[in-house]
Amino acid sequence: MNDFQINSKQKSQFEKYFLFLTEENKKINLTAIIEREEVFIKHFYDSLKLGEVIDFLKVKKLLDIGSGAGFPGIPIKIMYPELELYIIEPTLKRVRFLTDLVRMLELKGVQIISGRAEDLIVNFREAFPIVTARAVASLPVLLELCLPYVEVGGYFLAMKGSTYQAEVLKSIRALKLLDSEIIEECLYQLPENQGNRVILKIRKNKRTKEVYPRKYAAIKKRHL
Image 1 (cartoon, helix red, strand yellow):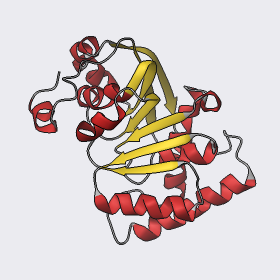
Image 2: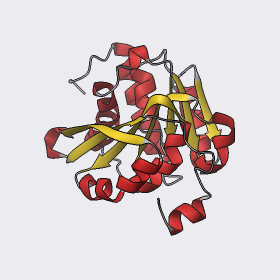
Image 3: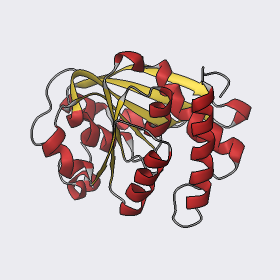
């Protein structure tokens, strides 16, 4: 975390986040990563790397789809407290966890939305300059679920592991159909040899057709 300029309040918030996460993880399945160093590197540090791809000081709002235990949205919100954060999470137990977490960390300007991305699009179509997702689904599936939320000229930030290139190859058709393109691949290594990661910066060039996203059953059966 020394790579980032974190003040004393933010350090305290990350420490509280870790303690709350590991305690609540005993009750519900939030993460398989529970050791302190791993949580700080694989969850917190990894999330904050988004700030090297987008200048969040110039962004008004961010949507995090399928946030789970709050990654990457909550760490980004801690780092950039003026940012309006929206989180879509389909699992009710995780929605409750996130709601309690936001209250405990005293974060303002956070909306936790319970539901599935393909259903909630009617309320938020092309409403966000930046949308992100981490460890939710394969890239072709994510593109259809996430890009409809991105405003024209905005970006979808897909956080992936070291084997991302195979997913990119499978996504060529989806990128074309959804009028978008990968403009940057931000590759990095986590500290302490904890693995390689990539952030795919995907720009949306035109409005998404109203037929997307399809119902999840259709997407899962055959991606674009």
